[in-house]
Picture 1 (cartoon, protein in one colour):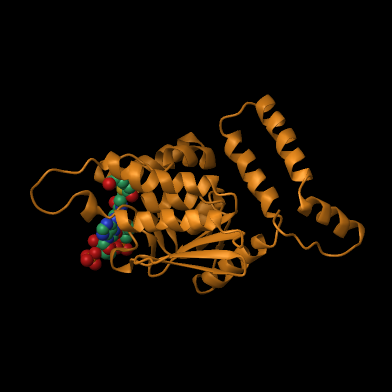
Picture 2 (cartoon, helix red, strand yellow):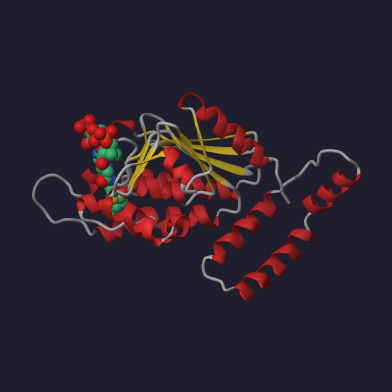
Length: 263
Ligand code: T3D
């Protein structure tokens, strides 16, 4: 797979996707969004991949939509920004949530607009101490997209979500962690190594059970209790038929560490 605006590599069961459009703070234009969509599809299809790490180089994780693409300089007809949301961001958010493997996002700097909400759609967010999150949308007269209006109220409650989304103030990594929006905060110099090690740890866990857990978490956002209990019953049956379940129990009985194959 050849990419121009990001890199994709697989090592030790982890697909590492690194945004590399540093001159515009890794903001997304259609070609970079398409490359991320393709990379997520590859990670989903590749059996050797058991965890995904999404990160970036430079001083930002992503400044969201490339505003030069959204509103080209000069005269002329404006593109329908709803088309950009449909083509660029919605497929990315759907891919992140349906990917049957854990996705770690390592936020190395500012994550603004769609950049922030792509991070919040991942399963685990690790942030550098110096990272920050901004719902930059209202500053330019837009509404939060990329799942922001779905994830943020669920992460922090509707009142706080409204403040974040309407006021568009910068939220530091420590505060995001304190509010329960992200998994952890680490010193900037260690972020990459910590994130790779964390993704590698996930990659030797029972991948299928993690995928089913993710499925149940996705469903909890719309299910009532009865529907969720029924889903747990069905998914637990499926997990109980996996080789990893047998291995987990055998390893426990034999007082050794399990060797999970992800199936
Ligand atoms: O199509 C649609 O619009 C619908 C989809 C919407 C999804 C969205 O994500 S909407 C939100 C879009 N993002 C923003 O509005 C954020 C804009 N950027 C900023 O607010 C700030 O740049 C940051 C808070 C992210 C960082 O601030 P700072 O002071 O650290 O950096 P800077 O000086 O503002 O930016 C550095 C360079 O990156 C600068 O270019 P220059 O002057 O060095 O040549 C700046 O223009 C460029 N840049 C930053 N963000 C974007 C960008 N270029 C294009 N698009 C950007 N989003």
